[in-house]
Image (tube, rainbow, N blue to C red; front, top):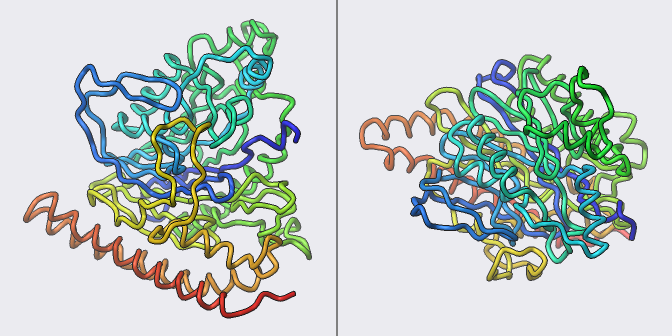
Length: 483
């Protein structure tokens, strides 16, 4: 197996600024692409008030806990303390991507030579810490960069894999109802740029060149000392040029990056983007383009798509394990997310609210694994379990494919969309009435009363989604796959 085969190649995120959306909310979308069958349930994490001496034990390091944290909802690999994506009660949302940098390449080389790098914080852990401690996007950025400089990043981001093979550096999109930031990192160094375009996308490559707004103090000096940046002091430092690992091909991310940017521009030009437009980006397989081709099968992809599917040859890294669209209003409307388990093209986006104070248990339930610690290298393999929303939709993905080669995908995916698209349309139409009921109850009886309609709405949607998924599973099981 080559080095390239081991890389966690995929994940895509984007943000659409309020001026470019139909209702004036910030939208952040994220597909979390992970190894096949790596369970990724949704979690509600309540606020906590630790003492000054409390410590957090992460996968590889122990850090000081904060005095107070924020309640949040995040989607997490079953073994991981951190999140791939999430939003907190103040309306700060974050998504991350793997980056392949020169620092990472050096650390991997050293680790394989027996000179183990100093362990650090995993990218998913840093994301959760930003949600727990950041009351605005800028504050989350400050929290995350401070922890990164203090503790570094090094460790396996993939279960049952060594750090040398499973580590990666990270980039992030961080947004609230008013502003969004891109944060890109290499080891302990980083740069950040405020998003000023109507929309912006990130993938598995650095996107910040010379247009950064903030940076770690020694980001240019470190690159010069290593011989990665040879320009004189008058040249504006180019982070992507200096830190991108030239041994890692960018075509695996660049096509997806450009495709998402194209689709976002089209949505904005068509009159403004909304949740439905964001969902269509996250479900994209290059439909309607020359890349689609006469024989293209999204479930057996010849190249990597925004909605990721595993290829039987191992060409692609895995599947999209969960997908989210975060809606971050600039006013008193509650922040929320639309969450889809497994690949969004075979799933349905559910409305979920942090201020509801919890989630239906079926959303938080994973599989059979019961963890005793956070270290991914010792994580047990998770297997399907009844009563898990995520595993229901993973089984549905497998049923839609029909077999490892995706023989039934084209026909069955159309059936799935006929079942789920009307549900999403109805739920989006119902949302304003649910918000109005919640606001009225909150004004009369307090915050807890206002949360009840939101929680009830999510439960109703979960029940309808599961009923539809079970009906589809029964329907596909009754029909033998074509030979």
